[in-house]
Length: 261
Image (cartoon, rainbow, N blue to C red; front, side):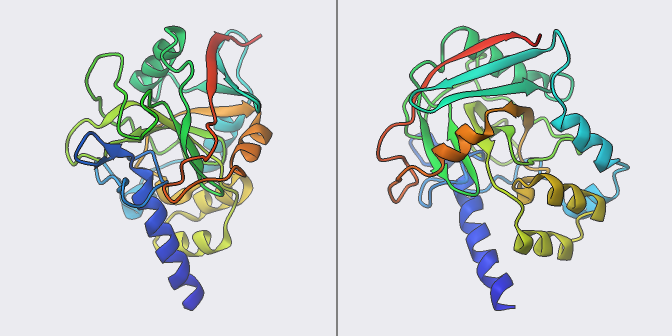
């Protein structure tokens, strides 16, 4: 019980950090599981585990599809990270069309060039996409926030590309910030999720692929890393301050969009 209790405290703190700071009022960015004072968990459009368990999903097939290599001609992107290397991602255009269009358009227009990963937490995620580098900035290609795109087939497994959110209740809350989930499988989290009624099939896939399962049904998963997770694993080892901001900037040099060959 003490083990589960301590795990719960850690998870709640991380979830609080997952929502990025919002504008000047420190409204949260749901994709930031990183800081303490600047983040909150998003309650917007969240699905409960019981609701999810009623959805008829073949989690094995869905996970295999999510983790598969892109098909020839499919849109992909390469994130060039200064001093670290390249991370390649594919997209889920059918399931999250707005998030994909937003990210791809920003990338093509150079919006992310020179932008940092401003929040980094080992066994959680790396978050970037804010031109201000504070966790409080950035906007969508439409100049206003857009809504979550949630689907039970897409899960925040290790390597998932997700939208950060301001965490505004019952309002669109997505701008330009995103995060890549880095966490591995965690037995305590699995036990907690099982006690919360998460489907056993989903928990089995979590065991296979890792990730941060408590984010399931809360954050928009719009892509998946298919090459370069070793780069992400190196990034999470950097020294950070009390707000999980790297002491030395981790910089996105550019994001190049192309077709998979």
